[in-house]
Image 1 (cartoon, rainbow, N blue to C red):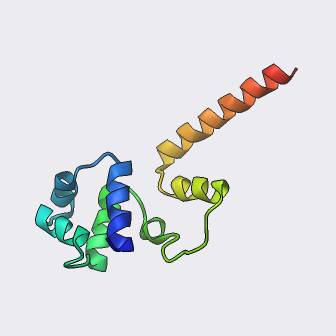
Image 2 (tube, one colour; image 1 turned 45 degrees about the horizontal axis):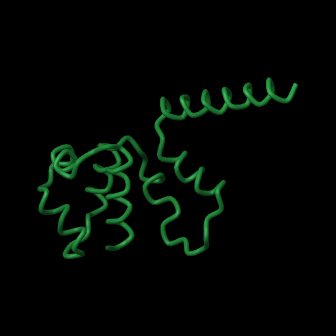
Length: 109
């Protein structure tokens, strides 16, 4: 599977969407999505833009890191995941981090 198709399948998995649900939101057939997986066709930029809209990310977030061949460290992996989050999800992550920091402060006193 090519890098763009891999990104699409990872993205819909992360967002908890099915291929059928994505196809409906984007206005394409499920067979089209399967053809991406089988590398028979590739999505156009217009379709990628619709995928981004359907999954709540920007095109920049979609393409971020593509073509990168270096190994990612844990901070880079976190940032890659962070870029895919919407504002509500980011707020939840920040609250979780604050809770962990408070917990460590209490234990260290």
